[in-house]
Amino acid sequence: MGNRVRHGVGRRGKKQALAEYRKHRHKLIASGLVRTGPLVAVLFLADALVTVFVEPEVFAATTAIRTLVGLYAVAAALVAWREQRAQQAPLLALILSGGVALDVATAARVTGGLESPYFVGQMLVMVGAVLLFPMEWHEILATTLSVWAADLLVSAPGAGPYSAATWATHVMFLLFASMIAGLAGIWGSRLRRREYLGQAALAWEKAKSEGLLLNILPASIAERLKAGEEPIADRIPEVTVLFADIVGFTSFSADRSPSEVVESLDAMFTVFDELISTHGLEKIKTIGDAYMAVAGLPEPGKNHVEAAARTALAMLLKMVELRERAGPDLEIRVGLHTGPVVAGVIGMKRFQYDVWGDTVNVASRMESHGKPGRIQVSSAVRLRLNGQFQFELRGEIEVKNKGKMTTWWLVGEGKEDAPRSDHGIT
Image 1 (cartoon, rainbow, N blue to C red):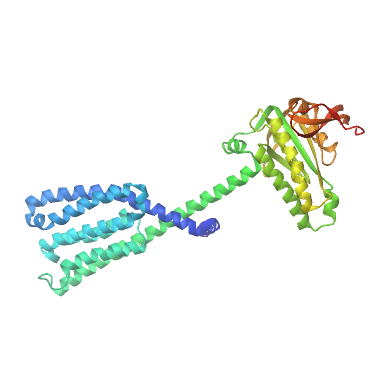
Image 2 (cartoon, rainbow, N blue to C red):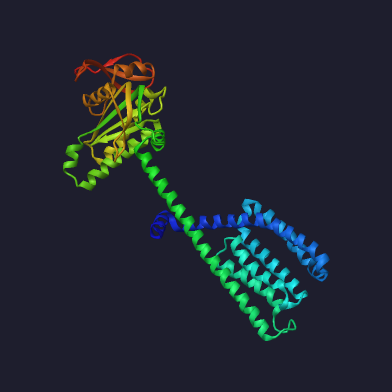
């Protein structure tokens, strides 16, 4: 598990993940201060009220420092509560721990030095600090040193009427408490870091898998699939299907290395991907050097015919630029048809979002029966685009399983003056 976590976070950027973890830890310390600060102030107030009657000498000796520490605890909680100041939380927690330790040491000195039960509080301060705040090893060390400094102000040799053996025993127990607090803090810090980086790695892998899923399926279809819907199938009353084929690619690829063939096809299809994304079409699939996209799904759209027409025209223009890099013999042939389709997800190992119906077949025939460098469309497309785009009448062509169909060449945008025919082409 650890190796997989480190590997996943490493691919994502370990440096970035650790920076995010530091921010997360600072927020945890800030949250601890928000809860602990008011509690410290209340406990100090309650203890002061008790010592007024039970140990007035302690009250007199600690009033000033308890007032300062109590006010600081509330102020630190307020500062930490402001999220934009959370990066200061470790320092605020360290000062609070040192202040509490100094108060305990002062009370111990007044009530008998090393014989005082207040010295137990020093150990509680160290252990409590690492349990309340998710500290790193250097912060744990700083907290421990602050407690030791406060303790030595009271318990150092010569500071009270006690023997060296008593002082050595006291130091030994304080050292044990420091070791326990340090080990608990360091192990807790490692576990927290490992847990956070593990969650970060899982989140990265999830985002990666969702990104791959969105490369295969439309976003709304992917959401339905993740929600457990099965089967995913829709009847869409009207869409516009676009087929494009790279003419001359077979002979082009015969004289080139596999890497050149793949790179050239990838360059062309990447441009087509950008165009359909710009115009709001949905890429369905590529078959060899043929490209299929649909406008108006998975969500029905009012302007799907116009979007498909603009995409087809843009493909022709882009192909002029691509030919300069890929080869002068390459051309593109495009076909459009509009009508109803059935769309859905098929497959188990490799999901595929596909469309079926007579509309798809006719659009395919518009492409395959067309001419290089031209966009052939059906009368249904021309009817929907009348007055917005310019067409040339091709005439009747024989379409498999459909018989004779009147088709048109889409030549550009703008108001159509009069039908123009492309005589001699059937």
